[in-house]
Amino acid sequence: MIKGILFDLGYTLEKPETGDWMLTKKFYSYYPKEVLQALDKEVLHNALRKASFPLAQDHKINTREEEFIQFTKFYYDLISNIPSLSIDETIAKDIAQDRTYDYEKYVLFDSTMETLQTLKEQGYKLGVLSDTWPSTVNQLEYAGIAQYFDCFTYSFQYGVLKPHHLLYEDAIKKMQLSPDTLIFVDDLPKNLIGASAYGIHPVQSLQNPSIQQDASFPSINKPSDIFALLNHTKQE
Image (cartoon, rainbow, N blue to C red; front, side, top):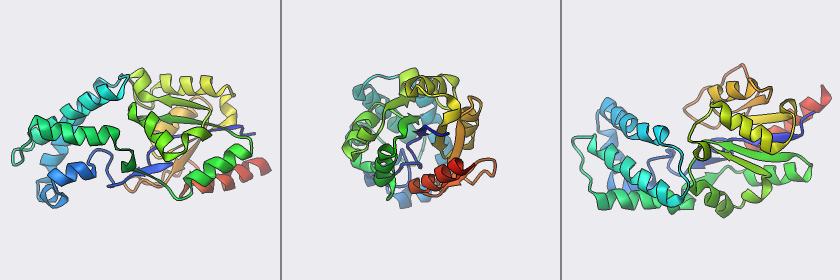
């Protein structure tokens, strides 16, 4: 019997306004999409890879101020690794300020709010298990959905990313439920495999346009589809 549901955030309950978590509207105001599209794809890919590496290696951060500093370096490094473009610290700080403090850059899916509210009314315990940064705490409050969750497990608290075992262990402990009574909804198969190792029931969200469906897992196309899965579970 399912008693609790853990949700990832990105491409599960919300999406980036621009379609990219890092390249925000503020970023595109300095570096328009058509400029980036004209670049050699390998050059852009390598620049993103090099700039992103420190975000994963130095991921344990405590405040939005630290996040701002980290993303200032990210944007400076990103553009510095593209020979045809230029950046200075003022521009990097402006983009990072927006990335850290503008909470409208993330958009809830149409059925997110209603789904969370109904799940709470039906007595399910809800939690967040997500790879993210400190600003997410404020962003969820701004979006009006923080109130529906009983607990939160964020990667930045431990300095590791899913599918690291510390995150699943923390989520299970905070939910105070047996893993076999929990569902975890995420878009990435590797994270669902990590949850399965703990006996948590995995469900793939198919809202990420860059991720293909993995037939190993039950799936949903939108947040409200979770109800059909729950009803099916009850009938088994």
